[in-house]
Length: 90
Image 1 (cartoon, helix red, strand yellow):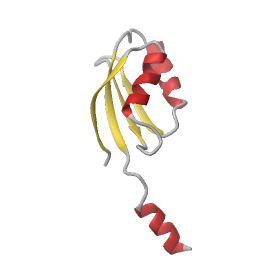
Image 2 (tube, rainbow, N blue to C red):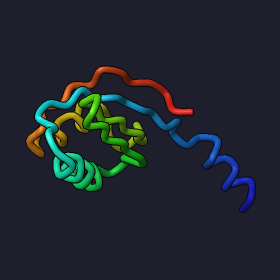
Image 3 (cartoon, one colour):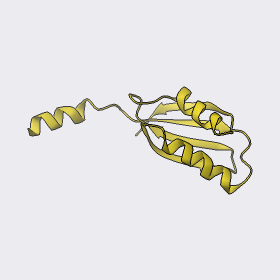
């Protein structure tokens, strides 16, 4: 049983992180709206909305979602989003 668990961990997907440039963020409520939209995305494990720099940083499981899908969710929430970086997580 322990061997099986170890193998599962060894083959788990490496988390990824993407940063998105987001338009129309003008107030704290905008940040909350984006966070709530991202809460509904399977595979998103962490998010940070920075209204000052107009960016959203998202950590996600690449087997469950991807930057294109995440950008669409943010855009559909009323905030046009474009991925500006994407990399493997630590």
